[in-house]
Image 1 (cartoon, rainbow, N blue to C red):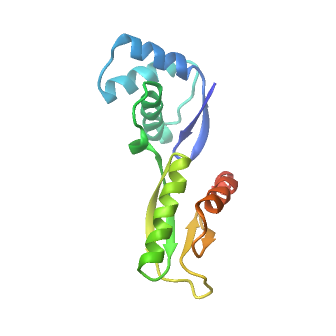
Image 2: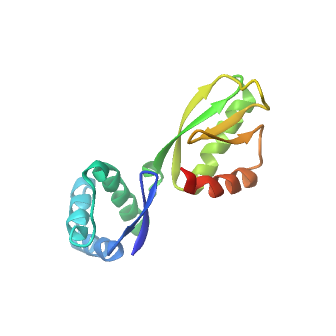
Length: 153
């Protein structure tokens, strides 16, 4: 079983590697065709809720690209984040740092900017309604915080 990020949830997928091997060997081309074939291969051993079908298809495409050694960063799962602070260099730096750190977890932030928090220090980063950084943390520090908090989101 392979662990795959579907939306913001880790999901076990039975037979993913074998399905990727079969589809790659069959010479199927085109995203829709490849994902349709993967989904058909995996259907017998995996349940896909209708509400998650599009996120699941994106995850399958990302995993196929990974399997064949292509860049899949365009298909990272999106996660809403809020960056609070006055417009300017520090707020932009925190937003950029957030993008770098989340990419390590195959996530892409959808950034909403908000006014500075009166309690400070600013800028601040919130994910899932929780403030995860105040000020400008190091990349290492922010990554450790995000890793620790991922299961809460």
